[in-house]
Length: 314
Ligand SMILES: Cc1ncc(C[n+]2csc(CCOP(=O)(O)OP(=O)(O)O)c2C)c(N)n1
Ligand SMILES: [Mg+2]
Image 1 (tube, rainbow, N blue to C red):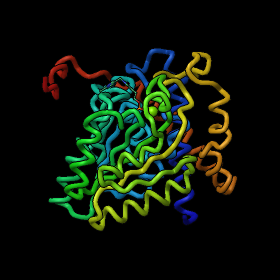
Image 2 (cartoon, protein in one colour; image 1 turned 120 degrees about the vertical axis):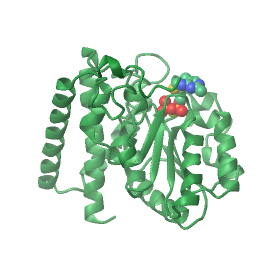
Image 3 (cartoon, rainbow, N blue to C red; image 1 turned 45 degrees about the vertical axis):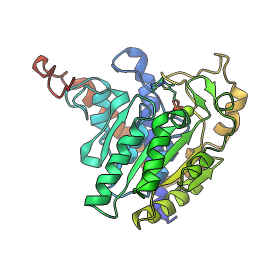
Image 4 (cartoon, protein in one colour; image 1 turned 180 degrees about the vertical axis):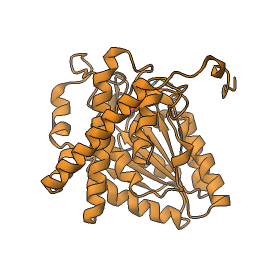
């Protein structure tokens, strides 16, 4: 990784972390008009993967997609306005946190229906294969998504047709409150992908540098026509499934279980490698950008009533 790539990656992860921490602070005020699923603790996956992507590549994710949107270059003020339900939001205030997207940066959208982004991104991969060889689509999803039928159907189809599709599984070990160990007999999700003909790579400790390396290599092979690949990044969700708080008192998981993941915070590991002076400048720029985005969202008007039925298909 070059010095510039390291600094970019630090900036991206730090920016996402701080955006979500500020989102969590604002949330109790009820100014944010949709539920928030925070990626705090696992935001480096989207950052490391998107660092390997180009502008013309397409991404999409689940309801937990602030990181994907921001890492792909999505406008922060438009995302904040979206969460506030404002007309200036990236989806005109009609999607909210769970359904962010931006055609301008190739983020086709996020779906709250578990795993449904996977076939949608495969459709994009098919279109790109036919119309824009060399470009690819990347689907971001959780471990729970690998239990849905459309996951298997899509991987089979993608492998058969050698689609330029990168499958990124953010395995945080839980689907809401249910641990992976109570849902599957095996915990190596890559073997599931491989059984369908999709080469798989596992980053078992979620290490951001390994992830960046694995993602860059997979992206290069996919661009060259090698067909779909699957990356399983083992990570940990620091906050509750949905909402701004910690949830270690709820009884389904413990702070002790979280501790090793927090001790190896990938943001800190990145920060340690960046010159402190340089870091201070970046951090200040991020804080200023976030403050401006929040002010923008607060001041922006809600959509006019006449807009109620526009862009609504059913
Ligand atoms: C098809 C479908 N079934 C169930 C739900 C309810 N649900 C919402 S989030 C979730 C857990 C998904 O877990 P995972 O894919 O691991 O993602 P994570 O929240 O951990 O990022 C479930 C079951 C849903 N939204 N869609
Ligand atoms: Mg999960």
